[in-house]
Length: 148
Image (tube, rainbow, N blue to C red):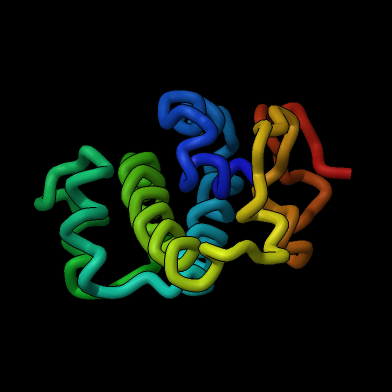
């Protein structure tokens, strides 16, 4: 739910970045993979890219931004120094797409648990909707925390 909370502005970006950077590199790559799936579920569009780049705070010339302008994903395979930029960008894309989806398809209410968040759970995990990403060594906030 951390990613949904970030996308909906219920969790500060700085806190999300701190959480992400506290993960192991392997877990960061898993989070980026999950974010790409979330963006797809939220029906992100190529037209969302310019706004997402602007909202993310990364330069349009940074590798993740260049990839996204070509509608290329796979940021989880980038070098380690590009992972945080990729995270910022994909959260912005997810936020843009999910906001549109909530306004168009869920404005009158919906049963989506992730659209009905009110108080962020600080112990929330990013794998809650992707059990296939759960492994015994996946951190949920720090490298020494584990998903049960």
